[in-house]
Length: 226
Image 1 (cartoon, rainbow, N blue to C red):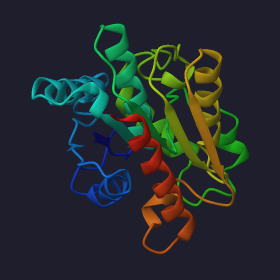
Image 2 (cartoon, rainbow, N blue to C red; image 1 turned 90 degrees about the horizontal axis):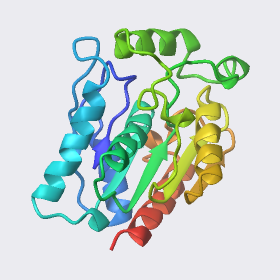
Image 3 (cartoon, rainbow, N blue to C red; image 1 turned 180 degrees about the horizontal axis):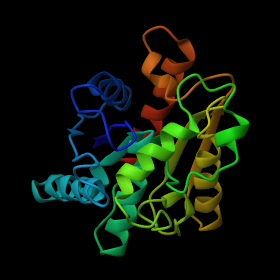
């Protein structure tokens, strides 16, 4: 189950089918890419509700949770994490594992890397994230665990693989997820890829490091699914 990026305000399953297809290829598993509702027309928690509904639909259709993995990039990475928290808290059987690519998982937008990495990041700006967060939250508090899952209790979740580039302003979100998961006793593997930008995986067709990261991610996901 693949959840696309776009700051919760843009993006589509069609636009992200290439990246989802590469994860699918690497894992040897079919992919479902979700067109979840976008803000500001559909603010938080609409995207979380849609991700949870899609997962439950897969289970209701006969796919065992042990055969489902989640994957998300940027906002989709935060959304995957939030969806698993909601599923956990509501007593659902959880997926086998999750891949979080350059996750945006802190809607408070207060991490130090938002400014310390600003001169290096060619893709994102703190101002842009602030605007997306405002539109996504729609008046809900950024401190809500489902809006900022990097700050949440991550206990009881399936194994997580977090992949991030070293020059992106969301570096601290990835580090926070890894630290929180590890402290909660959740299995987590953090990969910081030197000199690479936000969602560098999208350049798999020309960047050997991206292809290698996707192959590693596919092996991770396939190794945990039954």
